Length: 450
Ligand code: F0G
Image (cartoon, protein in one colour):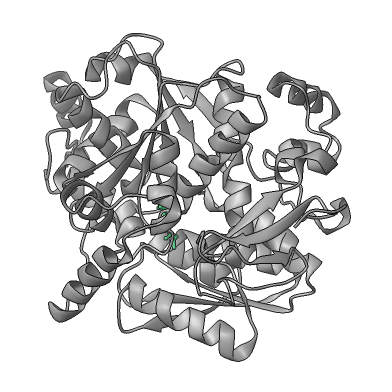
């Protein structure tokens, strides 16, 4: 779709390739049912000549769009007018160089970085996507919205919906959500519906509900959300002095992040703003490892968009026949039918990516290490360090390479997992509280033994 507009929607399936204006609202291609992408007519956009040109926005941070860690890169996600852009100050996140953790893992000093997305207003990376999707919702005049969630999406949707005055319903799997996240959805005033099922069941229901009731869908099926999530990569590059790292490591759940990151790098390369595309390592939990299984064991590939969908269909039919439901302590990524699977395959292709999975005990040990040496994070985020440890051991990643791990959610999102790990001495780094009588001598005696 050429012409004067800056952006349009396009089906990712090369056999379809249908195009739609950004003023339309849908979460799947109405022609063939495949995923939609946001495409740009770059010739109509005044893209900075080099990435470091974005630095000038730091001096105009009293402008709310320059303050936002998403919208200060707005030329790279130019799909809506400024007056529709919603912001609650998302993206004030930190790329922390962490030599202590690097040294523990055997990575060379100065090479390990933690991108802490827990610093977002709702405590997870989701706010990067929500600011973009809610801006689009505003652009199309949406009044009510909904999402399915393992927790963080519901918290982020609830806070943005409240900010914009949209009615909001969130669907969660009963008993499948960390309490920090559930408390946020309720506190921000979302109508919270607990389905007697898992996330995949909720994801299926919410699509039908949105179609039937004309609600605006805020899961990462929504292509505008992924545009916002691209900016996590821009901030990593910014944090590295406008250089790209050798590796990006990210947990894989519904695969929105990995898809967005691949798109970000493909576009930056196309625009001549970077020379090298980093490699992407996507880490599943072993109790929810559809991507690992499909890519590593069933050889599923992007194949220029001509994906062998029979492999996916057979795999899902098998899951259904087994009545399979995923299980991991990293409840955020407890997903067995990731909706962005195809876009993620494209990202793996673009970034020469790899996929692996880690056990729950590897995740909780890694989480304790991040807590001890870094900023802390929730279990799903710790899959990155658990994966890195294994990839260093197999020499897939080398100690001399520059590595950025995306810590997707705040350490207080899921206190139950943390407290149980330490209190019940579940892992190698458990640090249980010690009881002592209310007596000074006994306290001093105990402390001198520590
Ligand atoms: N990390 C955290 C903390 C998450 O909340 C999620 C996803 C992921 C990683 C996985 O990211 O889907 O882009 O691969 N949480 C969603 C939710 C599914 O509903 O909150 P992804």
